[in-house]
Image 1 (cartoon, rainbow, N blue to C red):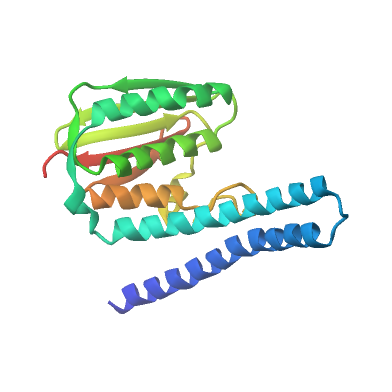
Image 2: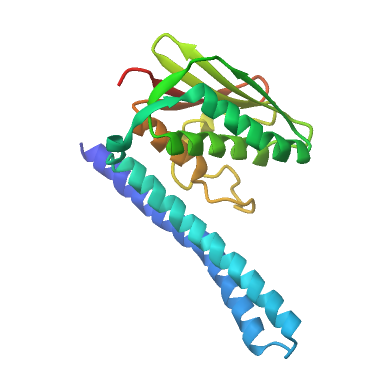
Length: 231
């Protein structure tokens, strides 16, 4: 128990440090843009450009806080009252059709393999958000020319929703750590994002009695969202 408490306190300190780190840069940029708009040359176009940049920085901060609140809401366990039977096959097909143009425009390909008649009891919006996060993650961390696939299949004890790619993947030693809150393998923290996408997917899986497994696609990353079919 003491080891568990120590781990939780260490995790809390790390999260606080990461939040402060992730907030400091966009807040500093926001202040600079506001100062430019306030004290810069009296050119309406320049002022409008500075205010537009400040607005984008504000939106980035709001997205960070929205993601934190969403994870807390999911982990709170109060969403089960809204669970309904969901046609997972139709959901995956709809998402594949919606994401295919954007993925193609980015120079990547998206293929799908969806078994018919798959259903689980849960929140359709949350399961869709989990798959969207996995697809976004696959696009962000693979180079142009990469192949991305989304798979929905039946297994003996539930349904597996898989997003796989043939990109650089994640080292085996980091696969459990990468789903924790605010964890990013980019140690310099120069890439976009806050390290919350996979953590939200994991929280959604747990809220549905399932789990998220990060594996090797040989090559690339294979993210498997397992959901039970039983209520």
